[in-house]
Image (cartoon, rainbow, N blue to C red):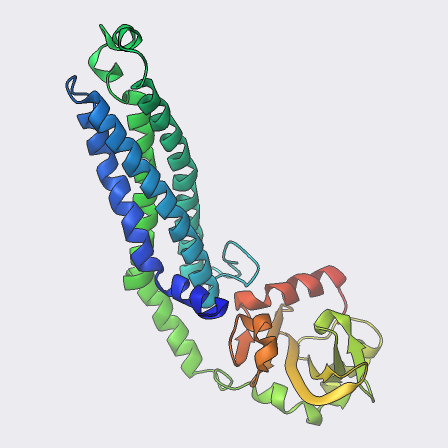
Length: 323
């Protein structure tokens, strides 16, 4: 099994991986409460430590698989750890942010809980006389693992419970996600370019800014030609921002030992909306197998703003401030 299919399997099985540590964390406080019984302190302290350790180790797999899954379904940009929320309508991205933060908080708290339980369990190995002095005359909440670790475990469960609830909402939906999905579906039906970047493909009808291909390090070191609408050609050549309604397309070719090859690369498109905001399109209908790592392993890619895959484009153009 190669690395890519293995990572895809780990990502796809995130819902299965997450239930194992969640179940262990759910029963952990019960085991810790049982350790308060004076006759079974050692047994239930050791059991609590075992449950916490396995649950915490399992949570690392759950966190990693969740991150991979979020990137695989394009909710998280390829090199990011949190989703990018560009508009208030990106309900899933907003929920996923809180889902991740709750899971990460639980992971940190869980690690602290494991350490506390390990320390309590080690105290069980102390000499008999020392152990009597430690446990003799203790009040109820000081016995076993103690009230402190128990409260930490409950906090751990609370974080993971919140994360699990939000995960369920993302999978099964609620009123907010269903409404957002309906609005997105309606917008897609009204969008003539929802499934095909028609204007970007018709770049030859635009004004050519570059007569011959030039190499662009910013776009994967590919060879490119730039095409701009007539309304924006003068502004582009003068280095000014494109006017509202104008757009530019980059047609690209792969590099062949310092020359443009016959292998076409992706199309890049930047448009200035009527309100002055920028929108981007990335279209690569046939990605060569050797380069699929650039698009998350896909054999084709079509991304449009506010797709998180385009966060790099947005950040670069806003920083440079050029057309």
